[in-house]
Length: 183
Image 1 (spheres, rainbow, N blue to C red):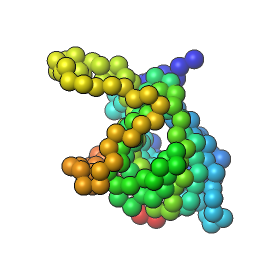
Image 2: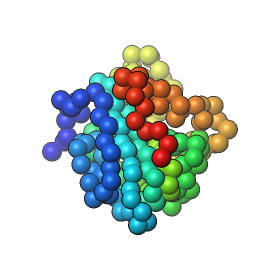
Image 3: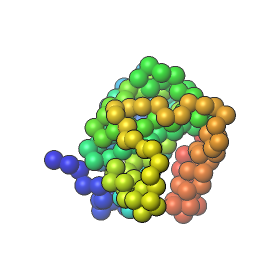
Image 4: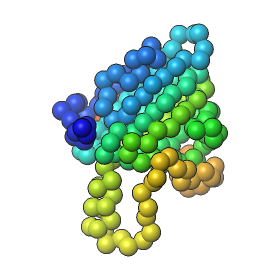
């Protein structure tokens, strides 16, 4: 059964995570299994901002973790990473400017280092199709198959600005609170 794409959840949800076993709790956009790879106390945060049929998630961690993350049925995910993010996705090193696209029901395996920040944009594929039709855009566009790297250029336009822009959106949506200050 598909998870509803629009829920009755609040528009902004901030979750503090101190136990990797509970990393999946309280959200219906991703399936997430996490294992802590260091013995120090875990401080991770997830901020979810709901924007109609789309959602934006911010993840941050102060510890080394390994995760298996799956996009729920009916959603596409586009993932970008903070400028200090270090780790791997499916064995490929993560770097600034990298953009991943993930098809519905696809799974990625992450190993993240302390200071990790990632931003996930989730939306139904139909939203992209509707916008393309409304704008009469006939340009080439292909939905991802599994998990794909779309952009991996450190100096590309916007590669450094995306995390700052999204943090500004979270700040405004959370009534002036910035819940993911550096650890």
